[in-house]
Structures are given as structure tokens and as C-alpha cells.
Image (cartoon, rainbow, N blue to C red; front, side, top):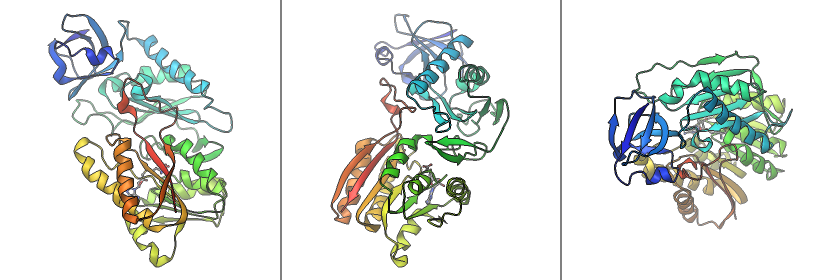
Length: 395
Ligand code: SAH
């Protein structure tokens, strides 16, 4: 295995189990590793620190082991097994009630660069590093071996791998094949998950607990689910007894999915209507429709995908939330989210605070939300915390 020797003192973050080696910390690379190769990381005195996947870019190594052990089929299998056992122990897999969860959450499961979501008997796997891409078949086999429910593994990494890597990833089944269309059950609700064409792995599993919370507050309310995608929040609101639910998304495909999912759970329910429209346009035109809401959900796509975009993203969050504060009924509840990893909880809260102040309305924080237990945050890798939400009472 090729060795990478660090500059003096650069071993400290690895000794605290942070799983990344930045290129600036490297003194010498012995040999010429290809992107995706396993490399051994040594301190300046050549003492072993970690084994990881080599990458080209500012993160040069993503650590898969802090122990000097063989990284073989058995190694990967054990990691998958441990991740599955944790989900079982958390009670996430409940026959007939819940077969939808995240099995592997990258660094949070000590598998940097790997995401795996489970929908019934299908695992959807996404690699964010060439190392994981090259290990995909071994990982797929490890999933089928350790997760008794899973028969099929779909690989979906065409858009997630570093674009300049010398590989041509192809999406497709690594094991098994598509068996049925409607397969995801989340808290007893049915969802069509289109992993072939949908965003990410096809469904946002990370909002499961937050959708449940919304359900508790929906009874008798008029609800606006902005950025609805698959209609997750809408379906929970309907089950919670909302008197009206409006779902909005600027993508026609998302509106299609939302309608399918509402239909699958509440056929011919007159309480639900969807709108294929831009969020800002919709919120701007509300006064004309005289259509204020008791409960608004704002779950937009990540406004900042990298650090340079933070300033503009914060402006975007402020503008969007200001619109909601303008439009929500007195005594309304606002669920507002940010899934931008580079934006901190405090920054997001400040953006929402500024929007609230602008509206001059009295606003109280009822809940501070985050990602669920199947999206764990490795305590040594705080960057893994990405989902932030506030539930606000707007007087
Ligand atoms: N709330 C969803 C996930 C939202 S993903 C869930 O629980 O699953 C973000 C969604 O925002 C996508 O479906 C995307 O099509 C939509 N979107 C992006 N920009 C938009 C805009 N300007 N107006 C309305 N929808 C938008």
C-alpha cells in the first residue's frame, strides 16, 4: 500500500479521529497513487495513523480505518453489519409500518463517501468518492449479506462522483432488479420512490421525524407545503386531520409524484391541491387569492452548496422566510428548514430572526429540529450535521 507522510504536527486531527486528511498537511507521497486507491497515512515520524481512500482535491484522504487492519471484503461487511444492527436496535424497521431508512450515512457511519438508503427490498447506493465507487460491488454484496430484507442494490452515482475523475460511472442494478413500483412505507404511509429518475436516492428520508411532528400539529389546519417534492409533509398533514393541504413545487415531476403519493394514501381526497409554481411567485400572489395558511412548511433545496455561496444563501433564506411571516395567519405555525451543510445552525437562525424582525410579528421558537438517528453525526466530524429546522409560533 502506498504511504502518505504528514508534515510535523499535522497528525493531530487524525489523532482526534477526524476522518479527512487535507492536501496541505501532506509532506510526501511515496509512489503515485491513483484516485480511489487505499493509502496508509503516517505521521512525520512514520508512525501509522490511518488507512483511507486517496482523492485528488483539497481533501486528499478520506479515512476508512484508524486501525492497521486489512481492508478486505470482511472489513466492509463488518461495517455494513454494524450500521444495520444500529438501525435495528433503534427500532427503525417495523414490518408493515416502516421499511424506509438510511442504512449508511457517510462519515456518520465511518464510511466516508458512501450513502445507502433502503426502500423495502431495495438499497439505493450513492458513492461520493472514487474509492467507494471502486468498492461498489463488494459493498453491494455486503449489503445483501447483512440486511436480510434487501434483495436488490441500485447504484446511482453518475452525478455524485468527482466530475474530473478518470471513470465513467453508470447507474444501474449491481444486484437484483426492480421488483415493484410502490415499495416505501414510512410510519405506515405509502410512497412511490423513483430512484431511477428522482432527486438524490429518490426520497428525502431525513425528514421522517419532522414530518411526524407536523402531523401532530395539523388537525383542523390549512397547510401550505412549499417545495413539496414527493409530498411527504402533505401526506402526513392529511393523516393529521388538516382541513386543507396545498403542495407547491416548481418541478412538474415533483407535483406528479406528490399527487401519486396523496392518491396512494388518501384516494380522491378533496382536501388536497397541488400547484406547479415557483415558491416566491406563489407566496407573492397569495394576498390576491386571499389564501393565508395556519401552517406553512418551507423545505427548500440547499441554497449554498459551497462556502462561497453562503452570503447569498443567507439572503435567500431571509427573503423566503420573510414571505412566510408576511403570509401566515395569526397564531400560525411555521416549519422552516435548511439542508445546506455549509450553513451553521446559528447562521440559519439569524437569517430567520432577521426575517421575523422585518415582519414585526411576535415569534417564538417551539422546536429546534435536526436530522434523525439514521443520519448520525460522527462526533469527531461535526461537518456531518447538515439539516436544521425551526418550528415557530407566529402570533
Ligand atoms: N420537502 C421535500 C424535499 C424538498 S427538496 C420532502 O420532504 O421530501 C426541494 C424541492 O424544491 C425540489 O422538489 C425542487 O423541485 C423544489 N424547488 C426548487 N426550487 C424551487 C422554487 N424556486 N420554487 C418551488 N420549488 C422549488
